[in-house]
Image (cartoon, rainbow, N blue to C red):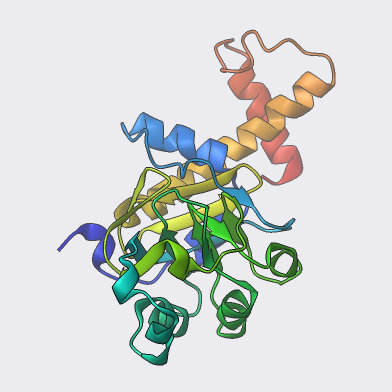
Length: 245
């Protein structure tokens, strides 16, 4: 079994840490471990969100539609993968959709995303488009997509599978991987690394806040960022102590 498919619960301290660090910082932490392709490419927040989107991935995969098998009648089937994904995605999880990077037809719309909100789902990500995007932007659930798309998913996409490994915007996503989204986009953390990545990112964020404050006061980045001057670590330690960080 892939380590990301174990379904282990996200530790509360890990969840809290990931809520307050940036995807940029997490990408640096991943790069240190040799992982370069975990950022979902070309997805953007539909609305403006105060907190990071964080949760384990629950996936939906589309394939190119075959017209004779993808008529409006398929929605009569309660086992239709798109409908099942909306009803089966666990509370606290993030629904991640492989729409083949094709935003010409919608991956989902306002009613389905509203249902995810009502069920306590933590967010939704697609590398395609969402219809009813203005309505979705007003919902209290983070949503990320490539761009708005009015046509029904049936036009081009055939929902084929749920909770299987997928690619979303060129990022590999295994069920249970931890999804983090902010104003810069969405990054996928391998589940077995999530705890250590959260700890490291929280530490890095403290230093970045210190460095940003120093730069704002007129200090050069030389020897500060990165902290190559001998006195910088001591200054940072004093700053942390003074601020309880």
